[in-house]
Image 1 (tube, rainbow, N blue to C red):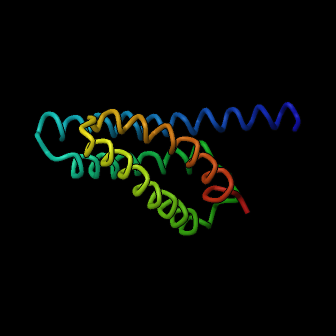
Image 2: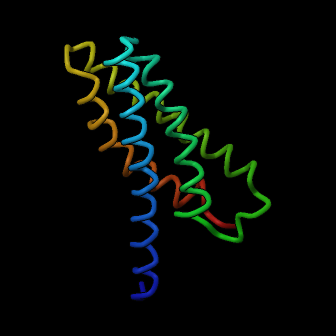
Length: 134
């Protein structure tokens, strides 16, 4: 791999991490407000946080981190793939957060444990399938 290609991949990964950070930290703030301040259960709090996070994350990933002119005209396909990957994430994420919560561990810890797994998992799916140019 050339130095230029390696540099592009590093920049792309850093942009991906910014999108993930917006999703994670924004979602965590929404979750904390609903769960700790409003007294909602962990599940509805997490669901609201995720809807907001996924929306912002999609925009950042699609139009900044993985931006490519070859993706123009493929919006429906890209969005469908994004929804499929994140649909799988729901089971993983909620399984981790809910499983830990059922063991008496705060869902805040679950957020971090889940993010540790899905960060790598999602990057690979986004790079090689969801946002892969034709």
